Picture 1 (cartoon, rainbow, N blue to C red):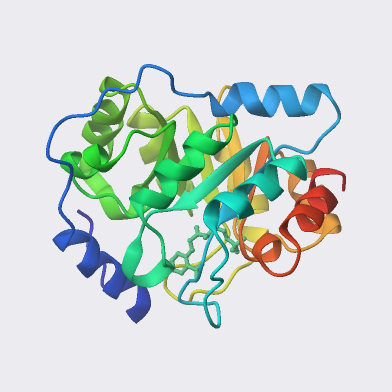
Picture 2 (picture 1 turned 90 degrees about the vertical axis):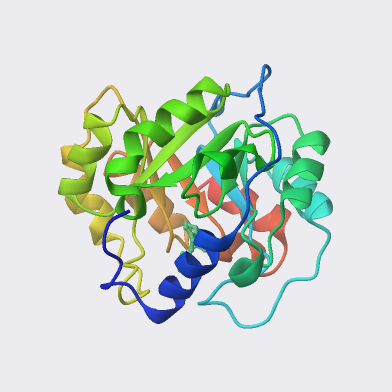
Amino acid sequence: MNSSNEVAPAVQSILDAARERPGGSSRVAVDDARSLPAAFDAAKADGRNPVVAEVKPTSPTTEGTNEGDPVELAREMVAGGAAALSVLTEPEHFGGSVENYERVREAVDVPVLRKDFLLTESQLDAVEADVVLLIARFLGDDLAPMIDAARERGMGVLVEVHSEDEVAAAVDAGAEIIGINNRDLAALETDLGTFEAVAPAVPESATLLAESGISSAAEVRRMREAGADGLLIGTAIMDGDPRENTSDFVNA
Ligand SMILES: O=C(O)c1ccccc1NCC(=O)[C@H](O)[C@H](O)COP(=O)(O)O
């Protein structure tokens, strides 16, 4: 793994916990993974902004915990037009769980991203997933083997980056779906200018997501104009009525 000495204390704590988290007891094989790019194409074809709505009970930058049932929240997001969902499985800092993930995936028919801080192959085996998030900064030289390991299990892979150098590393490692995180993991602040600055480095052939900090219809349009094929939105959907919020972003 890369050195993590330039991350915020909360992120260091997330990584320390991730290193200790056990994986699954046996290797999983997903034979029915739902495709994120196909879901984005379907949304675009019927005039919806391709929104990945995130079931995010809490986070280091959120006050309090949303105690709502993840399945109910997920159904509301899909009813609001979400092309796909993201479900946190990180338990200590985001209130997530693999049980939440399994229940949501069973309850909906859109692709469900497993949102976690995965560091080892066996952690991929904790639950069958359509798509897993792999963070380039935290995996370093392990990124390519982790992408291969996820694909061997039948899962799609979203590689998260924050800089042009990380885009290059992600492309070298074989990433086909790339998410540019607007959240700076050193300061924990979001800046949509990050997506605008880094997106030109992403090859046209990749499916490109804008992640974090999107909180208005105007910002959805801004990210789409800068080249986002999909938008990952958590806090602004969880805060209030998730169905109405999702619908506002989908129809922005
Ligand atoms: O959301 C946080 O507070 C956070 C803190 C430290 C590391 C990661 C964090 N978030 C993970 C995410 O990627 C977001 O949940 C996701 O991109 C949605 O972001 P937002 O729409 O800003 O909730």
